[in-house]
Amino acid sequence: MTRTPLQRRMLNLMAVAALGAGVVSCADQPQDTAMTDIDGVAVTAGANQPEEVNGVDLHFVAMMTPHHQQAVDMSEIILAADGTSSATDDLAQRIKVGQQEEIDLMVGWADDWDQHELMAHHAPHIANGMIAPEQMDQLKTLQGDQADTRFLQLMHFHHEGAIAMTQDQIDNGGYQPLVDLAQQMIEIQTAEMREMEDLLEAKGEGLLAD
Image 1 (tube, rainbow, N blue to C red):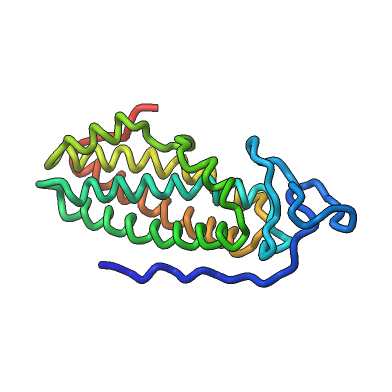
Image 2 (image 1 turned 90 degrees about the vertical axis):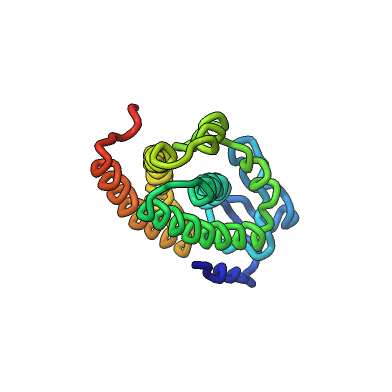
């Protein structure tokens, strides 16, 4: 099933005066002056960036986008594999569609906020439960029940990392629509993790060892 990606939210607000905990006076500097530093990237508030957006929001969007993209890629791998179960295929399809919609929304915000450099900086990063390239390569070689089981184990691990990162956004983010999206992510991924656990248990398989 294919859904139309969520449309970008266009924001026509004034340039912000501060990001994160630090406050910078706009009266003494041009709008495009770097206002804060996030993971080694000097970040400037875009013209359409709401004042309440803080460093936690920007870090979350930049890190969660590649995290979600890997989940989409993993789902596409399992959907292309032969001999996997209909239950796992259904789960993979829902993850693919749902996380792609969330990617579109976050990338739309980042574009509106002119955060292209920050997004590009984090695009290649592997962290917070993302799996290594060699694990992705191994998944591509599997078929049938082996592919089925490995996907469920890896995606459960992937979701765990995402939830840990997402809780920080809920607790400390400033942009309410993004906080709301983060809460939705936790609810959906927590339910999906339970589904993965049930599917693995029915196979007599366990989760990946820590």
